Image (cartoon, rainbow, N blue to C red; front, side, top):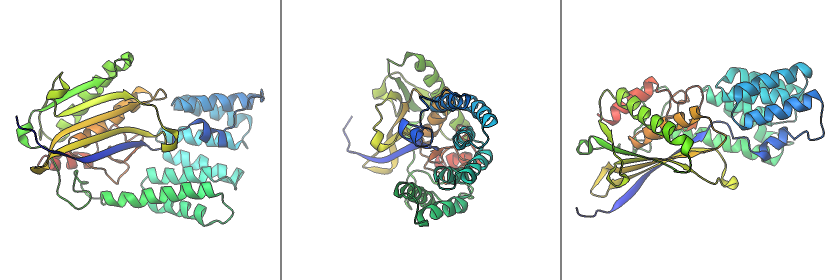
Length: 339
């Protein structure tokens, strides 16, 4: 077979909706209470640990206990707000974050979280208003202003992905005004290979199950618009799905969950030739987040772009409880991609 020049055209990633709790961020509003042996101090530290390991329902219970001990504790209300957010209970999260602003008006982190709640609910105008308030208030810390500015840029960037109320969103290539790039039927059935870091023995079976389920879901949603089969040799695959462990660069952020790259044939610029899905396992994850990320990244590998609606699985940021579930717009979009 003759060699052809390949051009990379796709680099799509999925990002955690909440800025992940790392030690630096937690320390700002959740300083470790090393010498605080009070009941409140123990509860706050235990809740923080639960949040860090994505045990969000447990964290919710702990922070509710902390509020019973001291209903004026900003850290307890903030922790509860974050636990709600990670569960996809955005209205409750917004309410707890608002309570924090009454208890500590100078602290902008609860306001930033309120903005994230409004984003998750699709209320982008309300979110933008909060971010602009933070930016325009002269007394606010420069770091808080930069965070608010970054969120505003993110909201503005969502407009590139189309009208969130439209029947569908764009396929790869369409997002920026071009023609959609898709899989030609000559590739059917699409050959899919699965690779898992051999050191991650406990995750090999769950990852294979999630990839299998994701292709079943998207194929059903497409109403048979494509066919596929699994192969063992990556060299023979059209799509390779990988679960890998990475060392995260703290300077670049900790919240990238997955990445998909695709290639096209130079002679057929609107057709895929190969896609590679990479899912980055983090020890703080649970298996539900692994499944959600796989569904999103497989969507990219099949030709879907990003959506501007947080209720779609192809929204650029992981939004529980919508993550992992294919919406009506997702179905319309995958059908169009294979039309």
